[in-house]
Amino acid sequence: MIKVVYFDELSATDYLNIYNGGEEVQQKEKIKENTKALAEKANINLFAKMNWIFAGGSVSGNIDADFAQKNDSIFKTTLSNTVLTDYLEKAKLDERIEKIENVFVRPPKNSIAFFKMFTPFLVMTKAEIEIEEGFCLDVSKLDDAFKNGKKYYEMIAENSKKQCVLRFNIGAFRNNYGIADISKMDLKYFAVKVGTTEEYLLDIGKEFSMEEKVISSAFEIIDGNDVGNHLDVFDVVLAGVEA
Image 1 (cartoon, helix red, strand yellow):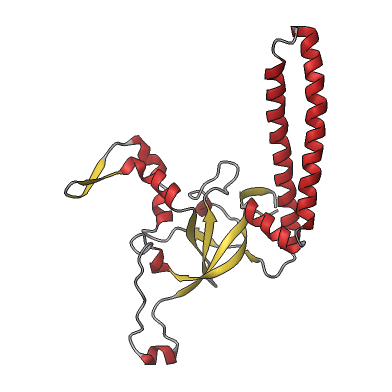
Image 2 (cartoon, helix red, strand yellow):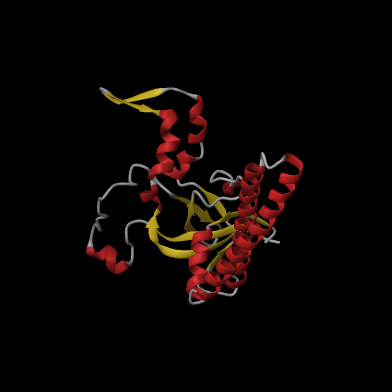
């Protein structure tokens, strides 16, 4: 994989912990934390001495704090990349991890994912829509409402042979990509099956509905003509451009 577009690091860490009995990831974190602590101590002392010599100690606190912040960022990035590399290595060989590629990905019509693609641009307007008398909808706040109310977004992945639902953690996109970008890209997805659904249930009007599906007759059950088209649902852990 030469370009990472999406990586759910917490899910990958859980997977590695389970895969390795919790030992490998914890050990790596411990090593990284110990190394970070030693590096911070050595370098902060060095900066403090240099600052005392050249500035009389007047700005040593600012230098120390700035270095500690940058150092922490470097180690977090290193740890994240270590988890990514380990996950990719193990997931490629794990038959329980679904590898989905050569699919066109689109938002279900009238789904929250569908609307989420353009709600960020609504901050440019202050328009209000009257839902009913005395109650108005501030469209500029829709994006914030979606972010706070829903963390995973469903997309339909399909080709000539299969169709399924891919769920994305909105906070796991990398390199400034977002949910609107993946429909324009040819990506490989590493995912875990978490259930089934039907496309019509992803409509925003059905999102919070508790209605039950009704089978019209016993003959439909016997014939297997169950109303609707059941789609497997996969939580995506990693998505990117394959080499």
